[in-house]
Image 1 (spheres, rainbow, N blue to C red):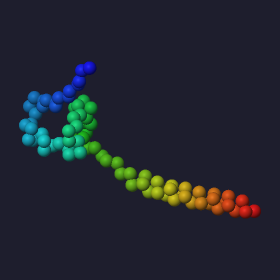
Image 2: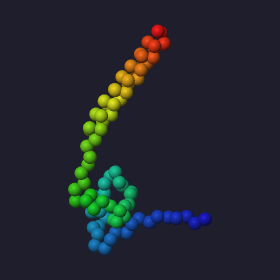
Image 3: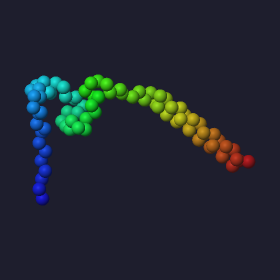
Image 4: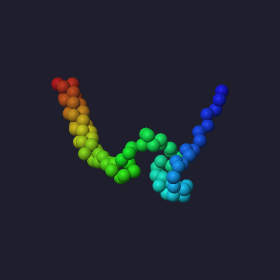
Length: 84
């Protein structure tokens, strides 16, 4: 069986020296290499808009409260019917 070893990507011709390239590395992606053809072209320009999911959290909380209320009402109804 042959073992596959991965090499670090070689810098492109005319690329910045290692010190300058290391300054632009995102700490969350340290050690991750993404091919240039798979990268988001808008990411480097700062044009990527991050979504705000606050509305989803609020709806989830409301849904959880309503679900708990419905379960409580069903339980009270079933216990009242069983006593009748």
